[in-house]
Image 1 (spheres, rainbow, N blue to C red):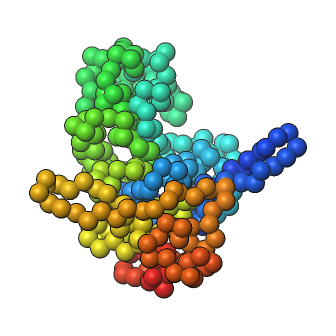
Image 2: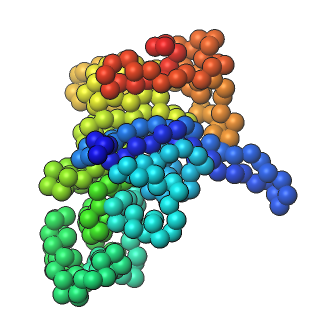
Image 3: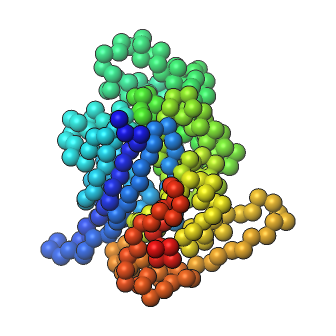
Length: 322
């Protein structure tokens, strides 16, 4: 059996753009050749600017969005060819925690109904008392008071609603959870509580996370490894300490330089990138970052860099290291 729970190879997810009833306007390359591996019980963080394809990557892995090409293997099984019935069975093993803890919950369902619904769909053999017992256990696991089972989503705070979302994901006993900006809508103190909860659940239940965020400070705290994305491609991937201690790609260096210093007297050299992120509809030739890269060379403009392992477990796509 493979050490990897999830294996993604050359994943591409394109969205067609229509200019009219009979005119096609090309495609938006949201994900353009992404490759990574996730071991069991580890956390892979995916970071990058807004619009770089982080969320689309996560939803493509879960088959919530149909990928254009590439391979996605979950537990050594190719899932890109799965039909509706096979996907239904897969849903209990792969879950998602959404960014907005309010809109992701049905306002007409109480906490009990929302969790009971998930159990009744995926475990029809459970009796009603058994489901109720599991609902109460789930609420305790995520740190919610069981007396609130009859309350509706609007009666909870943002942090409490996110705990309900996590409980709903845990209800079906998943192996992989995609956390898509799961703490970005919360206050800083609440973010810390949710991150600590996710880490405790991972330790207790052996969960594997694909943690998507634009906040490098949060990703550094929770992730085992980090993949840096730019315009639909992974430009660097490494262990967390290795990436923050020795970032190699110019884009990664710029992102880390933007993280606020932990001490008010500590001065950091800020790397300011020029220009805007190019359109995924018409991405630049060669290295897509060359239009903003302070170390751009002639080859960067015409040749797409290949992935190079510069150190064990540290892979980069940049002509500076090939």
